[in-house]
Length: 186
Image 1 (tube, rainbow, N blue to C red):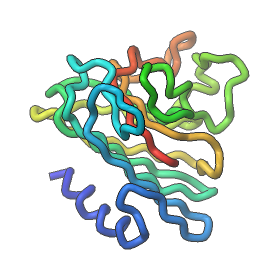
Image 2 (cartoon, helix red, strand yellow; image 1 turned 90 degrees about the vertical axis):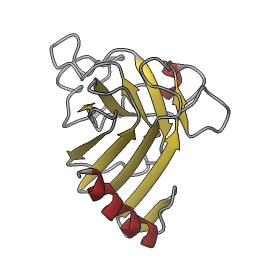
Image 3 (cartoon, rainbow, N blue to C red; image 1 turned 135 degrees about the vertical axis):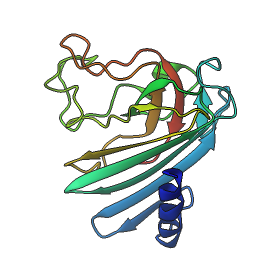
């Protein structure tokens, strides 16, 4: 039933010029991206780095609305492993052949120490965290809202991680191995 909400939003995005692209209204940016994930190929939208935990053919979809006052990012996944916890975050670079190619998490206020594991920077107010647990079919929806916009800064993908995101000092923002990636032009 909750997947109907995404189906209701998508037509509005298409009217705004969506359909896998970005639409701009003064001070608002609406972005959509959707792809099945497979082993890396140049110019692929979605990539799996671990087919055992992020099976080839699973679908990742994103809808993002960003203004200078705030952003909402909706992630929908289909056909991942059933009843499993995953982490997901916005990253600064697009997907590439290696899991690390997507770079670090996008942060509104960038931690001067990288990789960032300081809870003052690695937290859901300064990053986009989209942790989710799949249903019995491997489907899930996650939504994150932050009080800042992406603007013209580098935010270029969503990475699916092995576990929900940790919050403890020294591990804040970590979520295990990078399993899959979807390039998104935030």
